[in-house]
Image (cartoon, rainbow, N blue to C red; front, side, top):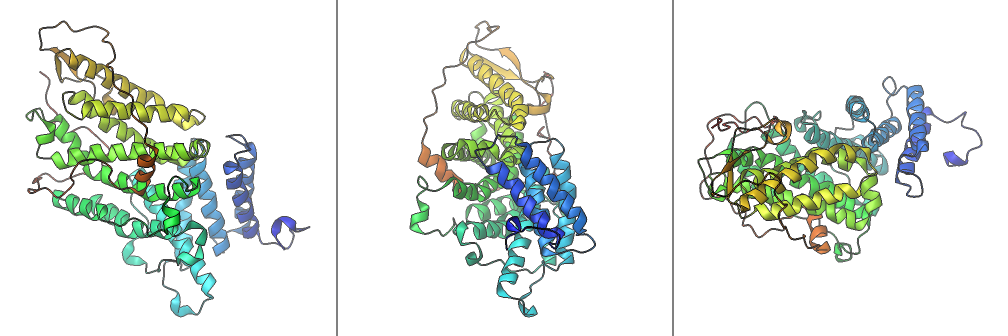
Length: 467
């Protein structure tokens, strides 16, 4: 008899009750008939936490308790409360240790388990493995699971036919792309070289799209939930590429010895960072087209997307502010306006409200710089303190064209970005949708100094000195 139909729970295990309440808590968040911050969702989550405490999963780990803890962690990812991130990070380590205690990381084919139980074990392990990698990439912290210490096979697609193969594609991307990036490009010892970055770039771009049936490839007719599954891989693919090239993009933008950034020795990284930023903007636009209310309610898009989308805004703003004469500057400003409009539409989330001022500041500064550049002014450091934490400051205006510098320049007349829903939805696959040729460069730049891939300081290594 289902748990919710039972007359008494006195004989039910506490871990089963915990899983029940955890599922109800997540269901309340995704129930569009309920308010955005539904108190019932948080009450159900507290009930799940209480049942888990009674179950004592640390002393008596069970698969059901681990599933309940995973759902509890997912709720913290969905939650918009300030303490949710720290709770997720601490409790996830408990879940990962329970995974080892239950032996989910090992190949159980020789253990004579029931096929359904075996598939359930595999699915649970790879779900937690994926959660670990996403957290590591988002927070800039080391992964818990070491690929040399597990041999659990991937689950069969038949275990979750409702996902149409997208769930297993997500795990394949984790194994073939995200883990190598985290293990090599973000490693401390040995530090990665630029040739390693280029090799990983080529590998990630060469990964195939999911082998979906023809009926499921109609993105216009695809459900919002399936589009979310696509974004789980396509968004991480673009995020990994952006993290690979961001350091070289900012170094090229700050190199005042090179007049044309598109002819810099790191031209490939400049184009890659720009194209990846555009693709990520299109992904969010595609999700908003599918279901604005659902997208606004999934707070971990803004939790993980805040640092990533802010980085996208910084990439685009850097291109406009430091290189306003670049051919890509005007289109970069259009994309900045587009992503800002998306965040303004999701104004129901408190997390979105917290990041809007920073993104608006970047857009306004970029718009002003582009306007001044059209009046014949160029720019060079020193940098002020207004944007020090975002863009290494804003440039000082230098009069070069003999024209007076306006105190309050009019915003440039940037044309509105034409909406192309099909292109935006296609970006969910993580494929490139730009006219740039991303073939391997004929000459790979040599970087003698060691890289610091885990650093989130966007200040270039050789920042120009004040004039």
